[in-house]
Image (cartoon, rainbow, N blue to C red; front, side, top):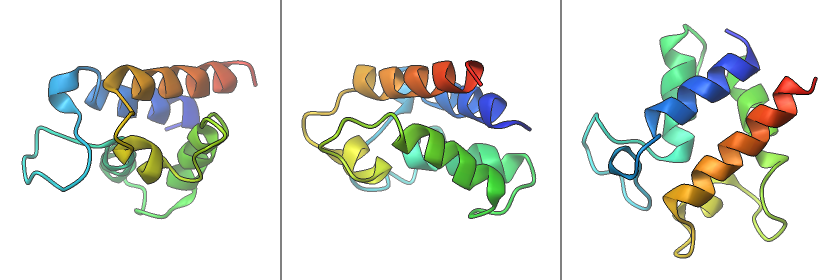
Length: 100
């Protein structure tokens, strides 16, 4: 799986507000945060949790974070972050990977 494919797959896991969550783990396998969606996709593709694909996907997303955020978790869980913000982050990262 490529970085671009993993970004698209992770985005698809949380592509509706009903599939996305922030803050505490809800113990519902149908829900995921931004970071958890990445981990699920990379794990499903046979990659280790902190393996090369996971790092590439996170790096691609981190490069697109608004300047005031230093991590994906802080961005996802910030009180002002919306589902649309998370989708826009994925869209920017996907566009960046498509341009490579």
